[in-house]
Image (cartoon, rainbow, N blue to C red):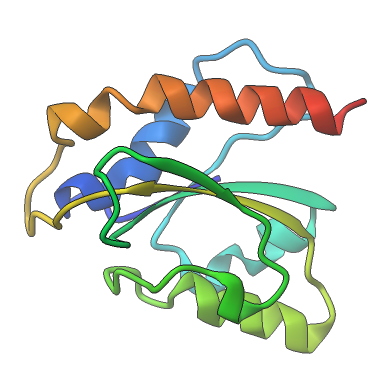
Length: 146
């Protein structure tokens, strides 16, 4: 599931990832979803799967385009929110934890440098990272199916 706000420049990375991932040859048991800024509306989709791979942008001060895999177990394990989502990922996870419906989450975060308000599209630097994220996600899918 790709997360992000498409009209905020590089913050829309997750949406661009989901759209590109939909074109990939994937096993039948894999569902690709553009989670956008869905907030609590995504809870049903997340709890319907025992394992969930999320892709989102983060402004963590690192090198733009850096990819990290995080295995969050609690809301505090998620990177600081960029705040362009209606309800942040941390809020969604806290709600799922309270309800006892937390799936096994794998979160790929990609470092971005800035948010471009009211801009649709990614900087060339972040656009170039999408194939790398797809490759890493596909490798993880293969590992999880073993």
